[in-house]
Length: 364
Image 1: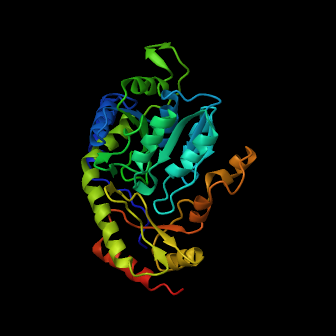
Image 2: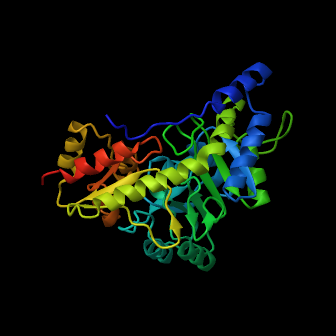
């Protein structure tokens, strides 16, 4: 079986975790600070605040950017549910914009259509889905015109680049995840990135009980802290993420070259001057063949998965909140056609050839 995902560890993780255990300081401390600095530098951001997960990073980023109860926040329905849930955590209301069918990312045109109808939108969360950056120029133009906060959900996009700039701090703030299946991992964990010192200071308070000094708290905060043990893993992962990202990109290129003549599928589209880091290598299967194709891959020993099988607003929670079907036709179409296949750096040349050969052997 060729697995869809495979976390990779160098051995440095064990060394640093042992250092933390030997120090006796296993909660937040100097390893967290070092990890924050290393990841911020890798991402070309001024500030990084480590959190317990990508979800808490999104929540903290929204709060630090001033999102409060009753506010309206535009985002995509074609994402993991945590993106929209983080808006609900703030007491705000998610508004769903459709996607670009080529990139699967939020459509700036659809965002503007909502902005023209809803005059009091406070924020937009764009999701760099699968590791491909959103069209940041168009979103920044809308930000300037309509005066909203722009937050990047970069939980799948470690080191992804938009026109030479790494994502995460292109908008007002960004959130990353270090869950076990991500391109780099701390098991669970996240970070808020920003170039804005005020947003960073607020994020740090929100993730630590609103603390300003020892036993002094001036806002309602949360326990969203990362531990030294998790941060130790992150420090080690920072040392290898650039090389592993290059391997992901090379693997993706080999897959795209090998599958370009398969007429029943579409390989990932990457616009000029975008660097896709392939958290997922996602195919689009035509003519209603996706489920048959997925079973074929499983029977052939090729790991695969659907990211995501349902748009957020069709989830039972969101249906109970009054969201209607049909809001985003392109997103609703995509959930019926996408399937992700292995692209991780652990794949051998033989694995890649097997994947290509197997897929080309699919009989419609």
